Length: 363
Image (tube, rainbow, N blue to C red; front, side, top):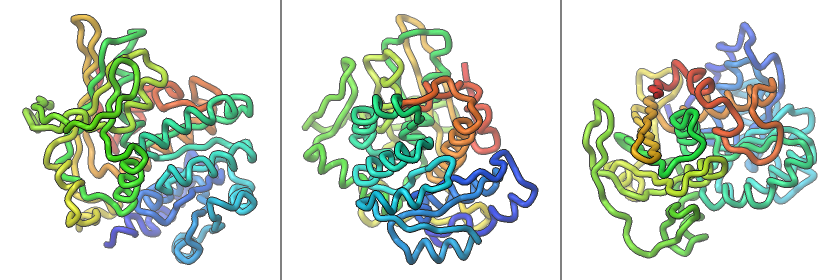
């Protein structure tokens, strides 16, 4: 099974009995991409009707035939085409990177249509832009905008929020990613290039309550993960979207993220191939495994939350579709504006709803 076909028409069969989506139409921008296909299959499995959109009309047409659904191509620089693409949709999920290019135009279209917008952006700068440029406008329009509702940004934020519990503040939060490997998609590579270009090749970290851009090398540290990983070398300050989502609503001045050395090496090596489905997996997931270990500290106290699962791209689909479903059914903590996962939803309840996709251990 190729990297562009992780789910096929399996979702159509799964949805035969209906589901929580109750026939609502959800537009997926970038539907034909690696993550987009997982999202489309998850929508169908939950009873939603996906409306396929994106920039490549040829790939959209082929996918529409495969899934027997409607496709509406739309260049991101054509507002009228985007408006036509979203017409009649209850919400839009943006899976098309680089989000530095796609997020703002699709958010603008969602605001014009007055429908919820969610994306799976891992690009730090794109997420910063979304909070900076659309918070007031989305709130005024009464539209929920949920950026980074994915493995990076969303899951770490939910785990951190759940670990906080009744704490109203903390001194520091650490999000350690224990990936056994990382075969990046072409979209991941392009997004990484765009992010590096926007910060002139510098690395970024969140310290003292703000983003810092640095020219020195990231440290290599040891992180003791829960079993079965145990003590592993990690790239310290391997900064991901969590440094935007977590501080957007939690008063934590130090937010650090870490990545296992072997996964970081895979990502940086140009010869690392794109992900492929494991032979035995009908859902199209790769054999990649992950363990996300979140530690929150306040004074002398420490709390931990852990998530385990398989395939960081595939698991993004239940994350973002669960979020869309909750937004559309009113199961949110905030009504409108640019809001991260941990603030928008009851974090503990949301994480427990992922049972079967993610195994979670909470304080």
